[in-house]
Amino acid sequence: MTQPLPDARLLHVLESQGYRELISAHLFANGVRVAPSIDDKHMLVEHAGEELAHFEIVASLYEQVSGRNLYEAVAARAEALPVPASWLEVAVAAYLVDRAASVQLAAYEALGDAQLSRLIHKILDHEHEHQTAAQTALRDQCQSAADQARAQPLVDRWYALAQSTMEVTPELASQFAESVRPVLTGCGLQVPAR
Image 1: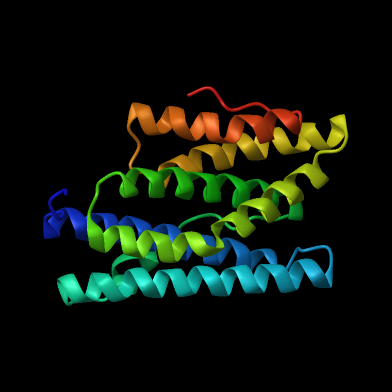
Image 2 (image 1 turned 30 degrees about the vertical axis):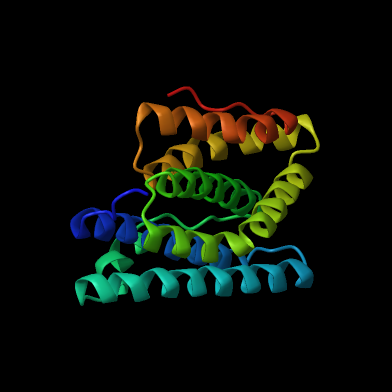
């Protein structure tokens, strides 16, 4: 049995995770404007709601431990993230940010804190669906060489932004690159060199 994380470390983890949940909600919500179909718009609204629910789960534990409001701690930083301007950019951003979050959650799981593990399991309930939807949207947008040429600069931009949401160590950076490589390669895209 591992020891619980010290409160300061747990609060840092919760702030980081709350930030990722909030930016994911923003990406999905902002994507509604450029989504190509009503079905896509409904899916994005649903996913944004799920991310906000995840944020509230994280915020609840954060408030229990610190007595402070998580939204107040991370909202300004989340607002600073760029807003995708096209459906292609939404697909790229959602895929990369979601993969970064998954890699980071796995690292948090390895910390062995019981409170954090319970929280992570609640969050992971919807993540597979989000990842599948993001992968499908990205593949649909990268059918031709011209599509791929338009997508690569967006991958370059959002790869760095997605990675910036993580507590990047060389090991996590490598895990992130390897987690996105199969889908990006399948779409005719490259993992940016870092």
